[in-house]
Length: 179
Image (cartoon, rainbow, N blue to C red; front, side):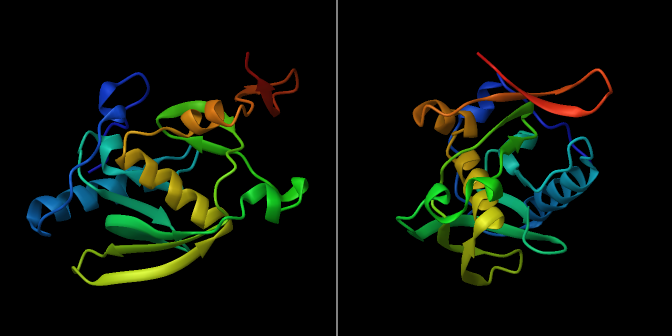
């Protein structure tokens, strides 16, 4: 079922999510709701969604890691590259992060370029994989949600610029820097 995505300043977004003990019917319902909700998000399209964003404070998120969404339960980064995005990607290839809980707000967060993540899937299988580039960034973003961290926290810490998505006189989308 498509759920309402909570937005800032909802205090739940600052809450640390609890570990999932066992994968039961309740867990499967949360996963089903996450998938329906993220697939239903179209303006903008969602690349990932954490359970806390649909008011479920458990350590689950879904993210598009290829053509479809993958399920991550109790994820944790077990290794992160020292090299950041800005050290690996030329400026023309760097990209803004956005968030369904912070509509129309974007910015470049200089995160580790590569991470090694471990998690359980919906069948309780333990998995470990290395992720880079946009997928790695998306996973770090969703994992932050489980710890009550928003991407704008990183922007402020890194003294990065925050942009708002607006439309120009011709109706084209443009990023306008916020004060």
